[in-house]
Image (cartoon, rainbow, N blue to C red; front, side, top):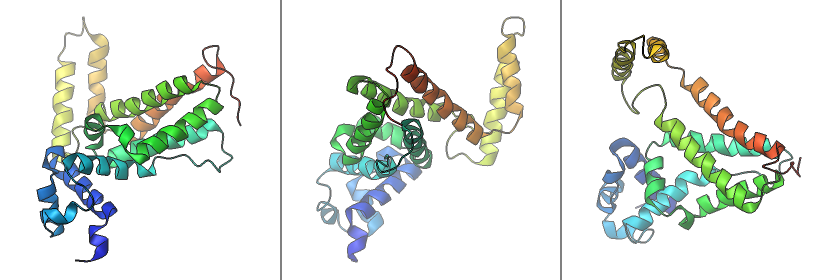
Length: 227
């Protein structure tokens, strides 16, 4: 067995792939060992039990969510980059929201580092450390909310299934009594158009960050202290 196949990163990556394809409940030490062609005991060098495995998956998945402290970019741009990185990894790995709700995130180095990066940037913006943590939590859960409400239909559905889902959604809304719900009927008609997920997510990120930037300018948040 090649050493790189059993590296901690390789094991976590394969576990993440299994979860994305079959769901979080499919991620087990036994199944993962079968996928990698080893015995379950071989994996215990890296993860002693399923709890540690799930923590390892979360840690691996969040490794790209970080701020570059060496950059001269303003805090707004760096926070946006972190939010966009979190959104990108969650779009790529749809099990992440459920996984992060299940594990103790603070026990993963990647989450703790990302939180620390966010706090450094947000205190530069003039917020207190406590306010910065509230904001970081708001941004993380805001990203999860964007994913849960995404307009293109159920994740991993085929184009045909998505088209049918949108057709049914449109019919549900346009059949409402127009005298009682005129705006919902009007909104229902938008399902006749092709979904534009990139515009949706860009709009959502702008919406999330606008609140943070506005508070940094007003009396509820101090004026930015950094560039």
